[in-house]
Figure: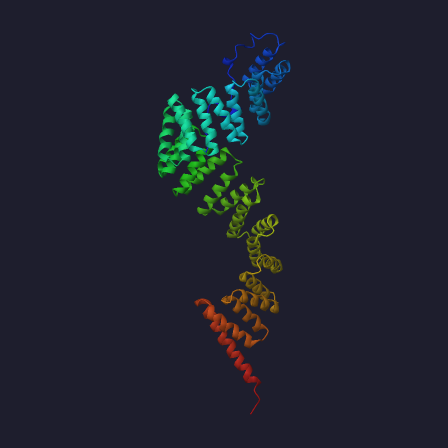
Length: 473
């Protein structure tokens, strides 16, 4: 949810008003004094030529090192260029040379807020309010800073004061609406955003925030309508597309959600989260190819994110490839996961299964060996490797692994069955019978029938073998 911006809130969009300076280019004296350079700086700043503005402020400061307004102007220019550290330094100097310069406190507070120092921002805005107690915009600014500190009650107090001073302040209603959302007062937020719309202040975003408030109130239908209005007024409003998609998804409208995410991607083709969300919708629509494409695209756009955030995406992608029958591609995904997280037991487990199905049994065996080092007390891992060793003809190894699985989980019927098979191939009929009998004790109904049939065959075989060994009378 986008933050409501007060009059000073986005420094990059702040324009120094020439009405505050009683001079213009035509009226300026020859640039041989600090004031003239300062005036040129203001002019260039108004034209958004911040480099030239800074150059002129530099000259003004060279001529008058205590020129507070020149430091203030240069601080704003640095802020507009995105150099917040230099901006703060200049605003510090402006305040030091002129403690009554209220707008310097305001803008330093905003810079501090953008630097992640909300408590310090509140302190500056306290001073600005003390200097200009009847300026509603300052209360909105301080409310924003208080909100960032988590002081929602203080923020609401400031927004209320701003509205008391200026009942037509759309920005104050917008800010209070967001604070009321923070306070879980959805009804109050709805009222504020509707008032913002009535005052024609930031209307597209107001409808977007109104949609959020309606969702919080449980009225998803009105939320979708509000998001739609925001989109109608501003088709480039990515937040509204994203929010409507989420609301439609929550409402069970998978096709509508997919369409909204597609529109969002058209406008923000580098938005990894949009691809990820659309992929999840495609999974629910059983459109596996589309889901695979979007997961891959989301991963490509998320290369700089921590592995903890990308690993679930790659895991889901691998699982989808398995559903597609693209085993080798899934193996490649799990291999990538293992390269990133060498102790990822699930990745080894899934890759081992895929290796096994692909006939790459030695590779599967290597993965089970690694799994045993990672999960030495997992009976299922020992059982799986025992079964694989049986297929590879390693009867002693199979018996060893099955025995270990039984020791860890005495009720694992499949392990008894596996060991019975290995012992049977070694002609250990007594051991085979014993394992089958024990397996039947723990087996479910389906497995029990199979083991019972095998047991009867082995018992018959053992009886024949015994009879063949008896001496003739």
